[in-house]
Every structure is written in C-alpha cells, then in structure tokens.
Image (cartoon, rainbow, N blue to C red; front, side, top):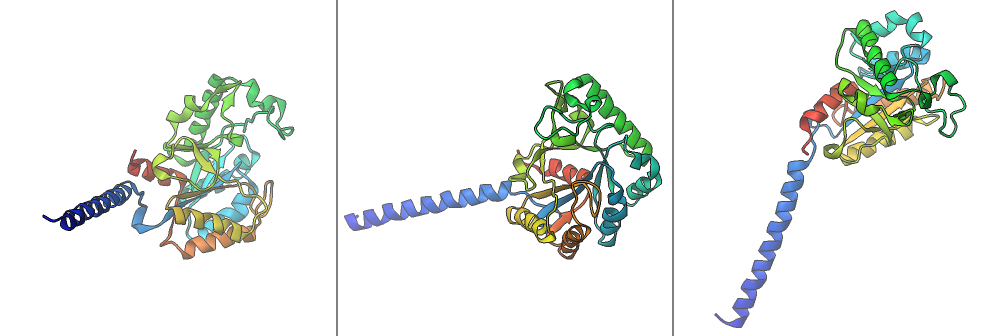
Length: 275
C-alpha cells in the first residue's frame, strides 16, 4: 500500500467515525424527544385562580365557545363559591377542571408587596401540619362539588413555606401535579418536575403577547402554562378581548396546540417523560 492510499483510508476512517458520532447524537435526541398527542407541537394549559365572578361571566363562556377546556383553582372560602355553586358544578360537568387553591388563600405577608395579606391569613404564622389539614379539606370539598378524586394544585402566591418550613412536600402526594414556579414556557419536558411546574400570570397584556408565548412553546416542543385571574373584570385583569384572541388562535390551530385541563396534560406528561 502506498502512502497516498494509506492516508486516504485513514481520512475516510475519520470521516466515517464522525458521521457515526453525529448519527448517534441525532438518534439519542430522537429517543429523548418529547411527543404530544396527535403530532401536536406543544401543550397549553389555560388556568384561572381565585374563583372569580369574571371567570364564570367571561372565561368559561369563551372557553365553551371555542371548544377548549380550562382549569379553575378555587379558593373554597370565596363567596363566589357559595353564591354560584351550581355554575361551578356545571363547569365541571362540561369537562373543565376544578383545582385546589386552598381554603383561605394564605400567602406570606413578609414578602415584598404583601401589605394586602390579612394577619389571620398570613402563611408565615401557620404550621406545615395546619396547611396540610386545610389542603386536604379543600380536596374533600372539591370532591363534594364535582365527584372527582384526581386533582392538581396551585400554591397561593406560589409560596412554599408555612412558618418557614416547606409545606408542599407534605401535600404533593395528594395531587397529580402542582404549579409552583414562575415562567410560562417549560424549557424541557423530560426534565420537568410535575410538582414544580412553572406558570405565567398575565396581567394587562394583549392577545398577541399571549399568542407569542404559546408560539415559543411550539418552537421548543414543550408547554405553555397560563394562570389568569380576572378576565374582563376583577383583579389582576386581562381584558376579555385579549383572552378571546388567544382562545380563538388556539382553536384555529388545534393541529399545533393540545389544550386540555392541567390534570389531563400532566397525567400524559408523567406517563411519557423519559428520565
């Protein structure tokens, strides 16, 4: 064998080795890529906190109009539960999820901007055992409303500590998943902790800004999580028009976005994650 042929064979060997290495990387990526039902590119969770009148007046009718399902995290002590209980039951009967948002919406008063937290609902003054009892009682009350046992949770103010101790660890066994962090677009579905899901809390945004968030999720192949409060009214409001613009877009692009209740989406995620 002459030197030229020997060098050619060595070079060819390096090229083939490189191609095999690249192929193995692509194969590994394909093996770990997260897939959504029916070939969709992303999941979108439309959630609503605090059991507000505007959610019954605007959010649920708009969801129904576009054939989409939402998740409503109910503060069980809210007068809107007592006064409009039949409407919450009807929402659950049509496929919307009723989630746990505690009995009394306790938040940490010591955090910045928390002057609105009432002293008797200060999470800093409660124990883990007290919060566990209240969260479990809220699940029982929700069962009395909708007859369902599988549940998800959003911690009020996404605060984790009661009396300085983490109470989420004491209650997470009661739930399929928990919204607990900030950030509306999930970076990686396979690395997502179902008990620390990130969520965006839109306020005063346009419909296009909301649509841009779901487009980011589609580009990543992951998930967009929204938690609205007031829709066309009440506090931390998004206009009814902006909300409807997002829902209209999602409805028109069901081949791209899977929109379902958070409990259904997270059951799917947990079953398909590759750790």
